[in-house]
Image 1: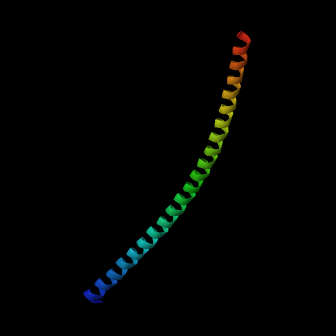
Image 2: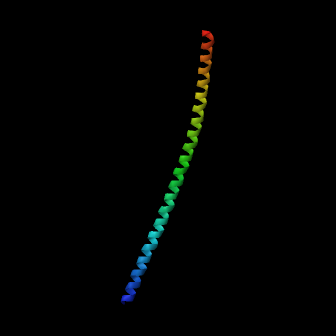
Image 3: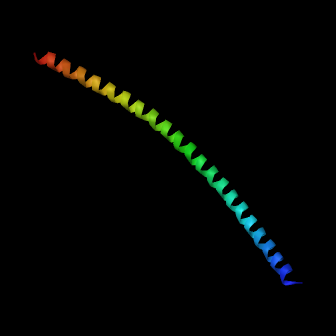
Length: 80
């Protein structure tokens, strides 16, 4: 085998390794993208749940404030 044939064989092997590395990188990139999309979906769900909980707590606080106002008003009338 001539030196040219050896160089061509080495170049072919290097190209095959490069192709494999690019394919592995693309597959890993797709997997990472999938993982990030999944995590983003979970974060969106958590955000929605937290918004719902915040609304519930705000409504409950409004109710408590209204009741405290009513109690304060009754006590003010009773002390008059």
